[in-house]
Every structure is written in C-alpha cells, then in structure tokens.
Image (cartoon, rainbow, N blue to C red; front, side):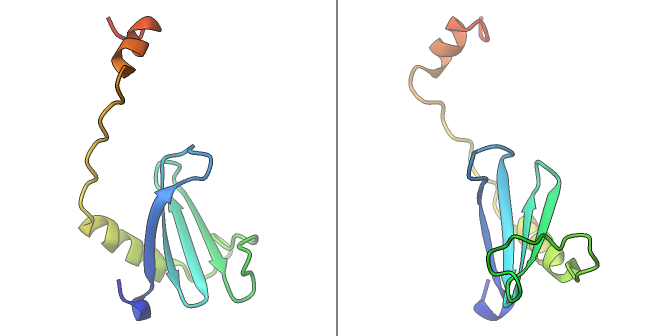
Length: 99
C-alpha cells in the first residue's frame, strides 16, 4: 500500500493470545482489528499518540479504514501452515492427546 493510502500491518498480540492482529494506519488515525477476537480499536494519533483512548464505537469515522482492511484481507495470500517442531507428536502422545 502506498504512503498516501496508508499502511497495513499484520502480526500477533504481544502475549500471543487471540491469534492474528491487523492494523491500518492513515495520517492521524489507526484502526486495529483482532479477527479471532472480533475486536476493533480505533485511535486518533494526533490527540492520543500513545494509543490509550479507544475511539471505536464513539461515532468516530472508522468505516473507510475498515473498508481498507477488508480489501487488503481479501487480496492477501493465505499463509502456509507452520510445520510442527521435532518431537511435537511424541509430546502430544505422552500427554494422551494422540493415540
């Protein structure tokens, strides 16, 4: 995505819970979406550069950013599944999860 249209970033929550997070940042505004949690956060980066005041749901205009996220997700390739680390199946078997 070009600088004038914003930036879209993907990753995981810092503590690893909740799976993926995706954000779109435009000059002065940032929308964060955690799809597996069904959770959005919207920040006014001019008034709140520390991203402490979530403005999602307070009438702030999030629709254009949500639309950009939707377009990006639809066009993004599916990430390949990560292979299990060595010994993973044996550990599951020892715990009784695998026969």
